[in-house]
Image (cartoon, rainbow, N blue to C red; front, side):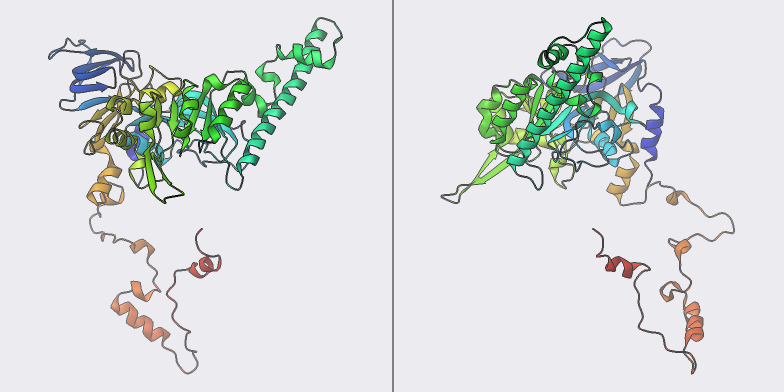
Length: 501
């Protein structure tokens, strides 16, 4: 099936998505920690203008009014980090700071279609955790023909991992990180010395100071373009001009991660991506004073080595009780609820996390982490009008995303979602084949008629089979055929190569 509806919307995005003035009326407006009540939402030039309270608020005369009575308006959800939408999640090289998600994002990926359907309107696309130092991330909206059209913010930060990549241990991983930053310092020393020499030549002077002094003086003169392209993003990182997302799989990784970030000068712009038992390093994490991102598996289990008893810890509850702001992540490859942001937030509430805090974990907090606070993940005046029209409460399992607005323009409607219609009804929907009707005098084409093999007895009429049997019946001079082989063409070759990997 072709994603006709999505393509049509993407084509329309060549022009600005927003209408001049739009008003959504009759709904409950829910913005976590900001507003919760029945009102109208006024949108101008693609941004939220105001929340209009009262039963009959005064509306602009030229506004396009959308009646959403009985619905709930909620900010478009924000996903703080994912590798969904990349042509490959990880690279084979141990360090790739020179890469950019811009070059690997596939706007036609079905993952973006799913995000839109689920109400996720801002996605931070980054590499996975297999590299010690990964490439640059990019925050995008899940709609557009090109990456440029989709981009909300370029350069959201670099991803670093202090936990071992596949086939490595922690010692080798950390040695690789140290080596990479040591190489950066060597590169900066060379670039600084050259830069100082050029400045002296401009003034008609000779370099009269020792090389060490020239390097020291040249450091203050360095510009990003003076640094080799492969090292440039790391230079911006240690200069405090880039954010860092540092992945820690276990609690023992946290001290090293914070010490490294502090030593190299990017701790104030570091977001820890925490998994497993990292909550055991809570006191150390609190000293950073920054929000964290939690890996999708929110329940940590461990077995007591002495008693054999299994203990469970619901990780977000620990951070919530300690007043550490956190953003939630999803597992897009899971067939369970962990693939949905709303489900992750609902689990938090079920396990005792404050409802407002859980809702902020899928809106306000990840927006803050991405440097988009007040711009996305909220319905406050001045924010992008990325609005979800929900059939009920956002954490209710029976709630559906009825409409999605990006920049104040409706870009998704559940009632027109052909793929969802086919999935729920089990029908062929309204695709191209289902629309074909035979012309007058034309026999209706049966499924697979065009692909029939005239020589296949399983696809012949009884008359054709009888004639074929007469033609192929062996005579005195005609040898008998070997055993019947009903495998499809090419199947033997497929088996020779061990099947599909």
